[in-house]
Image (tube, rainbow, N blue to C red; front, side):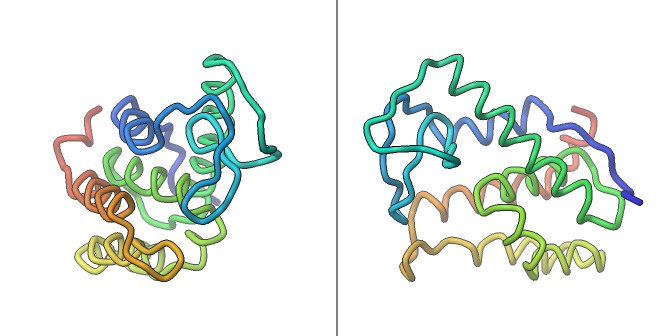
Length: 152
């Protein structure tokens, strides 16, 4: 049984939107994956275009998957900020990567200092440090540490 049954907050959503952007025409991300809207990849085809409403609908569906993944995988109680940071990470890296990560192991073991360091290790794309991912991981680590966000 899941310990957490949290919903993604407005602060978390702002974090995801900041790093994903809103691109209404399909493009290949830095890993070569066809992407559209706010980082949506499922079924995206070259040349595809969508409306802003479709981008927002894809985002909400993708966030449901990431939110459920975190709620199911984390075995200790989280603050809202900790949860939001983990959902953004999971949204970006995928639920499978999150389930297999040392980040999750450290969180579940209550070793938050190690977990915070783990965020910063997920900054590579194609074997090279990616500045955008590095900024995102630092933002997630900062959100994870943000005790003030527990009430949002």
